[in-house]
Amino acid sequence: MRILIIEDEQELNNAIVTYLQQEGYSCDAAYDFKEASLKIADLPYTCVLVDLNLPHGNGLDIVRLLKENTPETGIIIISAKNALDDRITGLEIGADDYLTKPFHLSELNARLKSVIRRRNFNGQKSVKAGVLEVFPDSAEAQVLDKKLTLTKKEYDLLMYFVSNRNRVLTKDSIAEHLWGDHVEALDSLDFVYTHIKNLRRKIMDAGGEDYIQTVYGLGYKFAAE
Image (cartoon, rainbow, N blue to C red; front, side):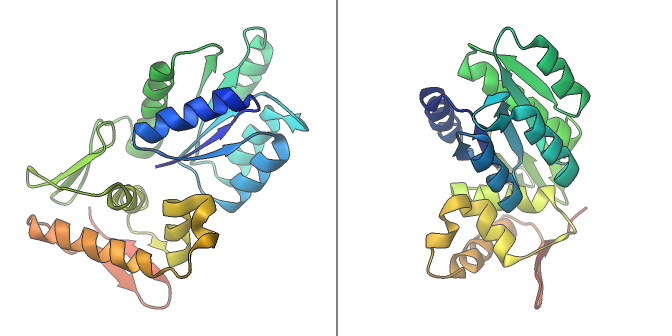
């Protein structure tokens, strides 16, 4: 799951990124309004953490852009203690939650998991797709009660498929989801096929069906109820 942290305090931003990466998330960072606007226009994010007081703009406008262009994205506001009115406005225009500085990173993680469950899985602790079951809080998956041994990229890919089941996902969108800002440095997108092949094999070896369908000329679709 890809998270964007929009926070101009570099030390705090770096601390959040480091912590969430250790928790298994893929993270991007933005330090001002312009950079944040470009990132949310270029990449899909599962959730965005946005500070309201940003250089060159207002975090509330980021919330508005997200609600207008990618309403499925979760939004958590990060605000100072004296920003009560802005927090209320943020919630009214579509933010899911807020945290007041200073806060514990463990609390941020708990809020983040809660928002993702509500947004993607109707608040469920796990999500089922056929005989496959995924547990977002622990970043684990199983088939017929048999735990799958997945790499981080394979798990991220599985979550992307499960969250977008029965939708055609292009190779470019999958690459951007898995690699974010670093995708432009790759020589080719062959790794997408490799990850899909490995994920498909692990699911089927555990007793699952071939849920990942190739849609020729378009991309891939995860077909499971």
